[in-house]
Every structure is written in structure tokens, then in C-alpha cells.
Image 1 (cartoon, one colour):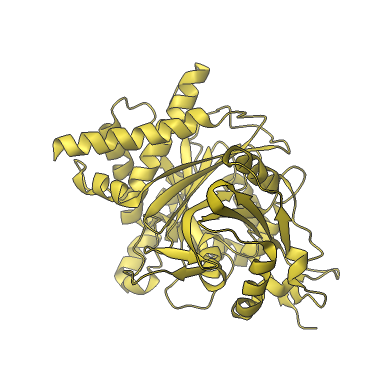
Image 2 (cartoon, rainbow, N blue to C red):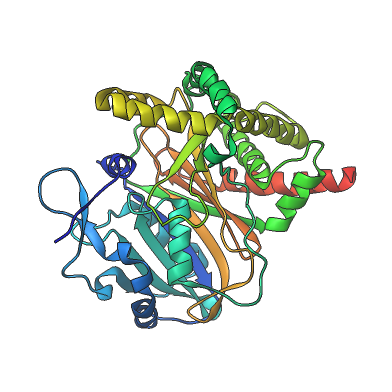
Length: 425
């Protein structure tokens, strides 16, 4: 039986799963049609060969973690038919999915199918982060489930920074980048975040919420802003407003929160790999009272980090450090996960732009969730598909037992920015 060792990054992500921390992400698809787990199984049987990674399991033998083909693989072990639920109960079903660990004796994914009112169906797909990052999971979704319903333009960037820029730099610019390394590491990995209610050891229970908006609305806001902003800038500004609303409700100061923003390093056309990304940090402007001022502040933050190529610098630092000393690299990674460095993770993954179908039924909603971490009790996963953008909020229920202030704050900020930019235009 052939073994494929996990990459250093995948192994590190696998090791983060411990105690109350689960290691999977979740995609929630709502379709306009009644479909069963049996129908889903028939569909996947024809398309699973395109994604062989989903038939791999962790090697039970001792030694460094590795993938091996599961000799007992059957689709039935990964598909579950749930009782029909209403929209409110769907949130609880998804929260329970985020609380339940994937079985390491099987390939690390599972899909639950539940009927909804109005002839709709929800597919709740969990996949371990060690098996797929956000970009890889979206590629898998295209191979397994998503089909274009009509001619569509190629998917544009929804705003996630994507900076595989090694080939775009001259030798001189690389030399300049090397000279910037100490400053970048001080700025990005220094202790900049303040203590917040999210800085706590998390428990086993999860609370989830979703906010949905037209993708074109965020694009228009970015185009009409006082300084041109990306969709990701608008999304980060909206998250800032949601956090401010929540902290205001707690009577706590709204300042000093910092977001870790994953940056994809996947190159177009390269073979699918599990995890290939870096990150940058953004100081969230919660102290700003005006929505447009918040957006401008976020835009300045992200623009400066992109111009400095911070994500590439951080990626190269950890790569080189791992070659020098595994022990030093682990200590540096632990520090980079400190709540003194950042408060919460906010990811953004672009999906297909045009109308999509799943199992022959129109895709109505696509949401994404990612797991929290110790001392980072809230995670925001943003995904776009079929002209919509969704903010998926996952929290430790002991830290935030009600996500509605955050979710409603995000929605209000989008509305406020839309109104302000329309008035200014």
C-alpha cells in the first residue's frame, strides 16, 4: 500500500485538532429541489474518481502522518440522511456538525442531507482542513457537486488576496524584499492585538450564523468608495462593524482587534494540493465611527501589506526556518497563533460566478464555516458563488452564545456603505 506523507503544513494543521478543537471546515449548500442521500450517492459515484484524495485515510501505522488509500472505502459511510428541518433548525444542525469530530479511521469528510420547507434541500459537507484548504475545497466542490446552469463569465476575484508573485519579481526586487524581512516580521508578528472576550480557551459547543448579500453590491461599494477598495476590503470593514456592535452591547471598548487574513498561494492550473497559503494581518478600525472612514482605513491597511508583499515574506520566513530548525519553526508558529498577535481569522474564498446547480437543482445558497482555535473564539469564513457573498460565523458558544449582534452589524454596515457610496456617487 503506497503512502503519501502529509506536507509539513498539512501535518501541523492535523496536530491542531485536540480537546475541544475540531479540524474540519464546512460547506452548506441549499438547493431548490428535493434530493435524498441515495440520489447524492449515485451522483458522487460517477464523479468521485476526479477527486481521488477523498478516498484516502490517515495511515494507522506509527510514524509521521501519511495518507493511504482506504481499502474499505464506501460512499455510504460518508453520507447521512437527516430528518427534514426548518430554517432555524438548520443552524443547529450545522452547529452540531461543527462540534462533531470526523472519524480518523475513514477518509476525513462527510455529507449530511436534510430536507427544508418549500421543496428545498440542504447539503452539509464537512471536510478536514488537513485534506483541503478553502481554495482546494472549492475546486473539489466544482468537481463533485457544482455545475454551471448557464454560460457564465469566468469567476473573478471575490477579494481574497492571491499573491503567488515569485515569478513577477525581478532579482533586484527580491533583494529589496529580503531587506524588508526584519521590518515585516516586527510589524506582522509583533504583539499588536489587545485582550478581548475572544481570548479564551474554547469549549466543545459551537454557535453559527450566516449573512448573505449580493456580490455586485460589495463591488459597487468598492468602486464608488472615496478610495477604490476591493470586495475583500468591504467585507473586512463589514466584519469590523459587526464586532463593534457586539462589543458595544457588552459595554467593552471597540479597539485593538486584529484579523488574520489567509492569502492563497495556489497558482492557476497547478495540481490540487491540500494547503498552500500564507497570511497577513489587518488592524480592524473599530474605533472609527463613520462607515466610509472604516472602509478607507481597511483599504489603507491591506494596500500597504500587499505593496510590501507581507504574505510572501511571512511564507518564505517560515519555509526557511523549517529547513533550519524544526524546533524553532514550531515555536515561531506557536507565537504566530498567539492572541497577542491576532484576534480572529477572517478568510475569503472566491467561487464560481455564474448560476450553478447541484444534483440538477438550482443552487440557492452557499455558505462556508471554519473552526475556531484556542484563544480565538470566533472565526469568519467568507465565500462567494452564483452572484452572492456569504459571511459564515462560527463561535465557541461559551464565548458568544448569540451571534446575532455580529451578524446584524455586518448587514447594517453593508447597507450603510451602499447608501453612503450611492449618495456620494
